[in-house]
Structure formats: structure tokens, C-alpha cells
Image (cartoon, rainbow, N blue to C red; front, side):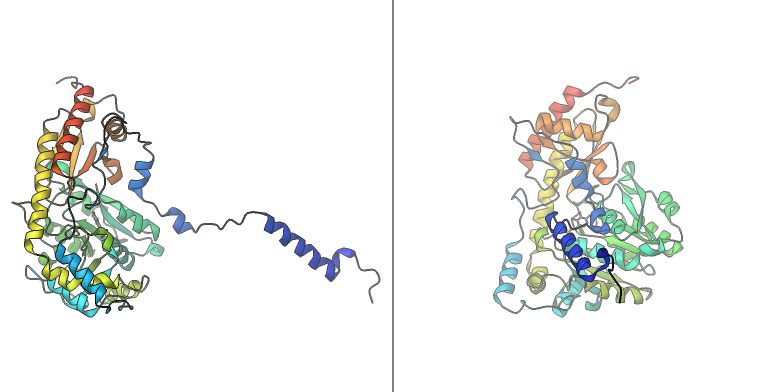
Length: 438
Ligand SMILES: *Cc1c(COP(=O)(O)O)cnc(C)c1O
């Protein structure tokens, strides 16, 4: 038997000490640490806008030409046939349970029929329903690109920032290929090819484009396919603005042109049917050479992460895609076209700005000639002062990865757009400086 063991080592003393520590711990506020992936997940548009510290002119009503949601001004809304289909879907009581994670058979069949055109035959098994087109992009990038193998994807500049958000979140590097404003924002093919290496897992092509409003010709799309084929890089085609093209332009899906390049097409109801909040998107697997056998398994596996898209909208999908009349889409195009016309005429008359007439989608890019506005150090300062003085807010090109531009939306009533252009003109006339040497 031990005589007089030191006090600190007795069992009862050990437990007393522990309880005392726990007691002290409970006095401290409980802060749960954030995971690295959550911490690093970024919304690049929000970040730039939040850093601008915008104060509108209190004497002028704010006109936001920045918001990429076609429903906010109330002039655009889903078709009554689409709303009826959604109501019917809910009332039927048939869509309250889980659907297969890739979607109901009937909903996949409806998308397959809708997407079968221009000689492309889509089968229901080629369709995966997702929670909005962003979720389609997420699943495609995750299925093709491996962060742990240091892979990269190529994305457009200027381009929609979500590609970067999604890729970097899984450790995939993004590389930008440039678009040429002087050439209808076509892809600089030389630059595209230069950026490809052995670790390139996919090329993201966005046509029609946000933010550029460009619509690519069949011959340009064929040149993109040639590069993809030569280097054996699959394509993720973000075609959420499919068919949203102005008269004189034609939308051609990359799938319709590809005989030997595997492509994942991402689209959905969001823009063409004006219902971003309904969160209905899809992936179409276009695989003429059976290169995607494993990728199909991967897409199916990844769809389990969210256990499938909203079933009420899935239940309505067949009637939406069949019953919304062609005239609804024509009206939408005419409305956007009218606003594009008004904004182009308004902006083009302003010294120091250059308007790029869009060919489709819902946006117009405006070039800011920096030598005409030397008092602003960059586009961020330009759009901030425009907001402070005229209460008109445009998204700076920096939100899409380029300086010297701003993007405006076309989904606003055209009278409001006229007023916005008049105010932009007042602002520019005030600050315009004749460049030296001209
Ligand atoms: C709006 C948009 C999307 C998708 O939006 P969802 O709301 O997720 O359907 C995808 N790509 C581009 C280029 C967009 O502008």
C-alpha cells in the first residue's frame, strides 16, 4: 500500500479538477468554427457591390439596372399556362413524395421531347433534373473536374461568376479565356487553346451570354468544337438563355453541331419561362461517341446529394413545356428587344460610352472609355458616382472579370430605361473630357 500518495494524483481529485474545467468552459460563449469550404464559398457579384458603399441621391428614385432577376419590375411574369400547371400539380396530390433523385420519368420525358430539335434526339435517360440551372452547373463541374488531382476548367471572361464559385469550392482551378468585344464577344480561340493543358477537365461555354448578350454563329461554335475534339476536353454548355435571341439571330445548341465531342448541356425554366424562384433546371447528356459512360454514373450519384429537384414543379413540367404558347416566348423577346433598342439608342448617343447591341439574352454591355473620364480611377468608381448623383445603378464589369465596362439588364420597363439613359447622359456630359490628341 502506498503511503500518502501526492494529493494531485488521487482519483477523486482528478475528477474534481475536470468538473471545475468544464464548469469554466460553460462560462465562455459557445462559438462553432466554420468549415473551410463554407468560409471560402464566395459570391463575387455581392462582394463587389457590397464594397462600393453606394449612397443613392435622395432626391431621385433609384433605378437598378443591376438585378439579374426578370421578375423584379413586375413587367415580366410566368405564363398563365405555367401557373395553372403548377396549381394543378399541387392540387393533384400526386407530387408530395420523393421522386427519383434524377427526376420523375414523365418529367424527364417531357424535357427530352422539349430538347429534341435541330436533328438532336434526346432520350429521357439523358435528362437529369436539378434545382435550378446553377445546380446543374454544380453537378456537371463536380462530375468532370477533380480538385484532388489539381484539375482546371476554362471559363469565359467576361462571364457569369458562379462557374468560379462552384469550381473553387471543390478545389478546381479556373482559367479564363477571353471574349472579343470588337468581334461580337466571340471566344478568342487562340487564347482558349493556349489555356488548355493535360489537367483541363472541361470548357464552359455560355451561349447566349450573360453578361454580353452575344449569340454565337454555327461556324463559331464549330470552331470551339474543333478545339475541344483536338485536345479531348469535354464541354459544359450553359444554354440557360436558349432561344432567347433577337430577330436576325439564330440560336444553335452545341449539341446540334457535335458529332464527336461529349457535351453536358445545362438549361432550365428560369429565364425563358421567367420563374427563377421555381428552381427548375436540368442537365442533358449529349454523348454521340459514348465517352460519358462513367460520367453518367457520376451525375446520377451527385444528384443524390439533394435527393432531386422540387417535385411540384416536376409534376408541372410536362404541361408547362407543352402548353405555354409560342406567343409567350415571342412577346418576351419583343419586350426585351424593345428595351434593347431604347437603351442602345440612349447610350450610343452619349459621348465617352460605347453600347454593344445585344443579339439575345437579357443584358447589354456598355464600354466606358476611361480616357474620356479621367477623374474616375476605374469602372467601380464610375458606377458608384453614377449611383450617388443620378441614383442609377449598373453592375461594373469587374463583377464579371473585366474592367472598363458596365452591364445593364433589359428586363425593366422601357419607359424606365429611357429615364435611366437620360440620367446617365446627364452624368456623362458633366464629366466628359475631350481626350488629348483628338
Ligand atoms: C441565370 C443564369 C443561370 C441559372 O440560374 P438558375 O436560377 O440557377 O436557374 C445560369 N447561367 C447563367 C449564365 C445565368 O445568367
